[in-house]
Image 1 (spheres, rainbow, N blue to C red):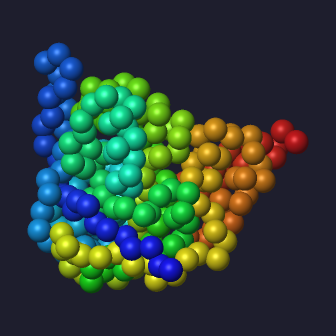
Image 2 (cartoon, helix red, strand yellow; image 1 turned 135 degrees about the vertical axis):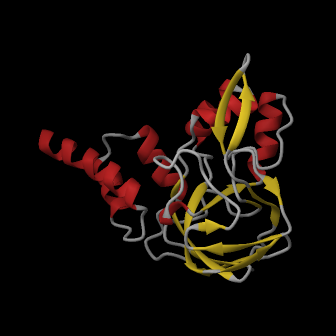
Length: 220
């Protein structure tokens, strides 16, 4: 039986000023707004953007996805109500947990086709937006970070669009496994090699993990 994936929220937004803490301000695109439809190009959604081009955006990180199920977990654990698109994700979905989504998986999203490339590396902007310091640590601890995708076919995406799995990657390296290796098993040579063996891995992660592997193998 095929599990139905439901889009719970569809958001985009350009960088703008965000106030946080005590009279502090920063430029960020994390505060996205729900929209009806947008065209998805290889660079990302029209009307969407990032402030920090070094750590966000690019062809391998054109679309950000976050599992809807985690919202309930975080709200219960941290006793706080989270706004829509808390993590700056474009698509909030059900039934696409990190343990079930593999790097290289291909999905149809509305009229577009996307491919999963890497786990999301959470940044301090999440803490600044939510004022919940424990959230960032818990995301890393659990590996519930969400993930990023490249665009294989451009097309229009609507609020009521469906996501369907077109192709499950044969190597079956899940986002959760890659997150565990990246965040918690820095010396796991075999695990790093397993992630790097996925040709469709984002270039940023490939560079980071290759450097890590080179250091480890030089020590052996």
